[in-house]
Length: 301
Image (cartoon, rainbow, N blue to C red; front, top):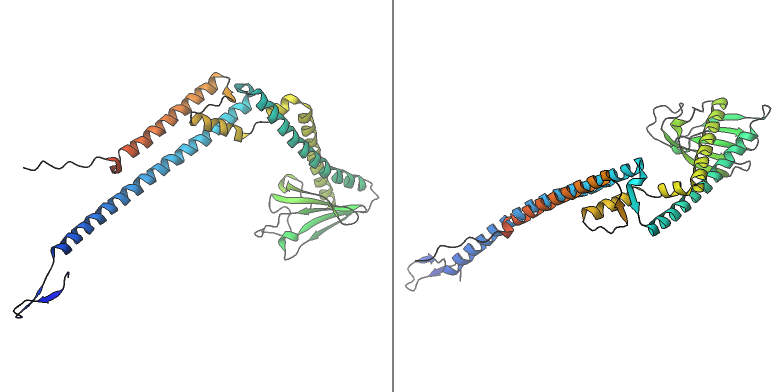
């Protein structure tokens, strides 16, 4: 038994026996705890450093992707794309533009019809403000004989004054038909419109919004009719983030290639930065105590 009180054969005294086994176990356990504590601290230190390096690595990847995208925006001829990739991207972007154009037309038509319905000076127009405890339901309304237009301020709870429009730059404008059904409902930057605090101002705000929608429609129609514009606008930031990632990982599929000296210089700088990060990581890993050789014991004499 370990660490117990036993009586000697003579029965004259009790002694505390500490066995050699207990001493050995205690020393072994203490050594294991010290080694485990050291490994934990070293591992945490290396993990923290590697996480920081990896974060910089990701930031560099995203930063170069944004740089490539801005360079492409200033001059699209700085990059070349694979032919089949161009066809697919142009078709996908064309479908997206067609959907946006259809939504724009559906939103613009009710506004145009409402403006025509109140264009007559003799037409009946009623302007009113509607406030309630439910801030999201507060709106300003301009009603004609064929429907109404409501301006919603976005329902911000911290609006300092409920009698002042707008109190937040984000809101929506809704067109109602004569039956009270929603004909159009669009999100809009309320701050870009005239303050609809009266019937005249509300009419001006509706006319301004309708003009913005028409300008957007004209732009979409022109882009849809121009194949070069569809191709130029088919590439987004995600595509150049992809190019940055395959460059940084030294993969190089060849579907997107530099076509100017400026882009080649940027690519070279990214590869240099990537090499620097790899050297730093290898230095952290190989120089850590986890990979260090155990000290040699001196030869016994």
